[in-house]
Image (cartoon, rainbow, N blue to C red; front, top):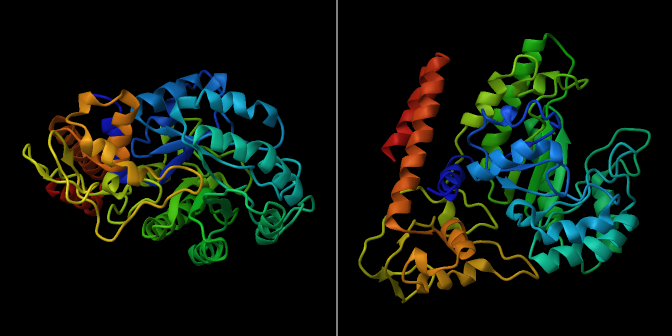
Length: 407
């Protein structure tokens, strides 16, 4: 069965969650990623996977974990068009500059410089290849080398210098241990810029107490933050920083994987096992792709959700949450409105291969055999979560996981 099946199950289980991939050690291969079965995307701060990341790229492609490229700064931006022409691993999103308002260890761009590169490279490339475009990821900065400490001031200057520029969603980072602080910060971004939000780095930095206390603080912070973010449809995606940060000052408690012992840590298990609230749609993806994975179609003609008044045969369509709709991207065809192409086809085999995947993931159309495979994949995830929880003595968590099996 195609990797599209585990990817569909992953959407139901952890639609927003991703991995910050920091390893360039060929001897490690994809080993640090193996414990994370329930993530839907990954990125590496680059425009394409590096040669040292070949094993991770192959693992992610096999598992259906989406790769999201980033233009980190102005360096090598002249190569962006050529890189995106190959659509690394089928990329459909392009992230903007990394912490441009920070010092020289980050993108280090003034708002005017960033706007210039946006007009000359970022937007033209995104338009040419039909990519959604994430904003420059400005973030709070406390260093003496900051171009601008206040990310909102930097963004305001950027949008002023880049009038009419396309930015489909806001990307940012947040390092603090207060869930209320995180909520306030992200809500301000949403209110001020009227766009969906991606939180592409976050963690709880601290050097207080013992190593175990710092790890517990990060576990508690992630659980509370994820619970809140999963319930907000305007927060599209998030990624914890990072898989292994034991050598990072202030962040040793934020590691999800022990690089010295090559084993997953409690925070990593929590990150992998926490189930996404599938009642909340994911903007940018047709809501049918996030519905509870219970096929309701028959092999007889029935009304089509994509084309009211039309009937379709040969497909099983997953139910769509009430009152939800995909958010169109300015300058890019609204795929949700194009789902009629799926409904009009007599069978999966009648569609070109690339269109089949879009019909499945973005419009929610599946063949009967595929719908059954999706249901099996979700049940396998729930069984595994229950087994893992019982292995740690977590009966309550195991009970929660087993309740998924009834769905």
